[in-house]
Amino acid sequence: MDRSVIYHILHLSGILLLFLSYGGLMGRAMAGSDKPGLKKFASITGGIALLAIIVGGFGLMARMGYSIKAPWIWVKIGVWVCLAAMNALINRQPKLAGVWWWLTWILGAVAVTAVYLHPYVDFL
Image 1: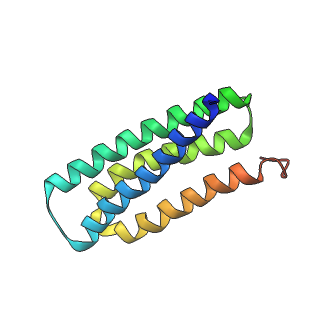
Image 2: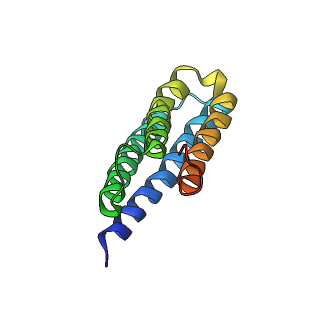
């Protein structure tokens, strides 16, 4: 099996895990729950997911021969940085969980758009 498949699975499963963990954090915040165990579990899960996303993403980039100079890769790195900050935002501003919910979805949509449109759009 080609290693790029392994990196792809790692990258995508990391994304699924990240959205799952942030959904848990935001659901907890929207419900007004103050269970520290859930907050800790979801935050740790989010950190593991971010690591899987970055390792899988850079592994894919290397195996597929993409350059770090490609603008669409910088878009994806920017989205990753914003999603990494989202953990702190959700935990420190739980009253804005509805805003973080939609912002998380928008960031995901931006990343997906950059990946699928970069072969067709010159500026990506």
